[in-house]
Every structure is written in C-alpha cells, then in structure tokens.
Image 1 (cartoon, helix red, strand yellow):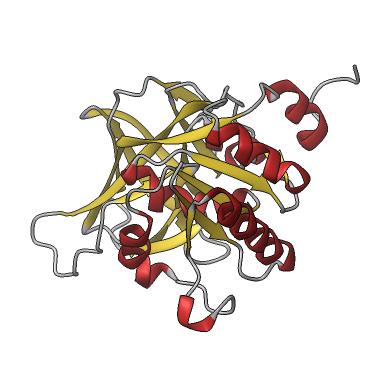
Image 2 (tube, one colour):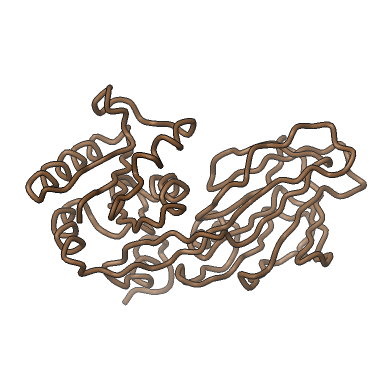
Length: 295
C-alpha cells in the first residue's frame, strides 16, 4: 500500500484526532496520506462540494480510502471515490453508523490488515439520477447526473401540500402517486429513510431498487422492490402543471423541478467498493435499529 485517501468529518474532534493517527501510522510504513481538508489551512478548512474535482484529483491512485465520521460521511465519500474505484474503509465516529465497519479503537489494526491484503470488498449498488427538460420548457437544466448510495427523493416544497406525480418503469405507466414524496432507494439505503417510511430492509450487497411513497394520500401504493435493470421516470401529473418539487440525493438538496422536467433514475455505472471485515448484518439490525427479538 502506497497511498491512503482520508475523508474526515471536519466538525468532529475525534475525526481530526483519527486523521493524525493515520498520518503517524502512514509515516511509520512509508505510505502517503491525502485528505479532504485544505492543506493550506491545516485541519480547519474542509473542501466542500464545489471542490469535488480537486478532491478526486488528489485521491487519484489511492490504494484505499478511509472515512472518519458516520454514515453521512460515508455518503459524502461515496460520490467522490466510487467513480475512482477505490475501496473504502468506513470508521465509526457518528451516532448510528449502520454501514460503518470498524470502531476507531481498531483503526490501526484494520490498516495493518488492509496493508497485508487481509480484507474483502463488498460492491454496493448506487443509483444515477438525471433530469431531462421536456419539449417546450423554458427553465434551465440542473447540472447532473448525480450518484446516490442511499436514495433519491422527490419531495414537496411546501408544508400542507402534496405532490402529484406519474411514475413510469421502462417506459410503461406504473402508477400515479399523490403523496408528500416519492423515495427511490438502493439496498444500502433501504435501512435509512426507506425503512422509516415503512419500506423493506434489503441485504445491502444485493442489486435492487426500492420504490416507496412518503405519506401517500391513498393507501393504494405500497413499497415495490424492482430488479436493478429497470429504469424509472418521474413526471408531474398533467392535471397539476403548477406544482414544484425538490430533488434530494442522499439527503442533500440537488435541485427543484416543475412540470417542465422529467426525473430519470437507474442503476449507476459504478459501485462503491466497501471494505467489510465481518458479516454483522443481523447484529446491526438488532443493536442499531432494534429489529426483532433479543438473542
């Protein structure tokens, strides 16, 4: 191992301390360390979304990426490193940490194991979301596409109002939906917002797409699990041309859309290579989501 990329949560003192620990380990092993922090400002300037290109350039050629934070830090890292094909070790410094793999106390031990090649990676399917402008539209096209490790959400923009959308799957009309929102989830994201919205939890290594409604007005729309090859298209219902919705990708606001836009969601061409050191899916369900009975 010659190069380690680190994505640290700027506002967690534990993350900055862990970054220092990684640098000490790397120095002892002749390994280069690069991070998402602005080098000119030491450990006080995080590179934001507008500098993603700089981060990717800095991370290019890394043998492994390490996230220091929680699941949110992993989501932030996924869209940076997945296109680079770099395996990711997620260190738990957050609150829930459902998809993080190791505690900070095991960081050096885990780096030793990775340096010796004693680990496996689990490919995590991602979604790709893009917005198309319909014929005759006057509004500008939002920059895209976007990658999502957890989910893509079409949400209402005002409290007390619903959105009315029409869903197509592979060009075939699937459903009209009147609800607070539509959630399209990966298996990795199925234990997050989708689970809170009453959707099923899938094993995270599977390839599948979950369609789920957020507070539907009519209970005719239940969660649906689709194969990964399907392509989903979402448009506003033609009888509701004045509505507006916002698109969130992994919990981060991407853009607002109107009846002039069409949202297209499909399996992304890249996967996140998540380093897995133990199979703890059911233990995490019990301990972190209070699922099932005690064992």
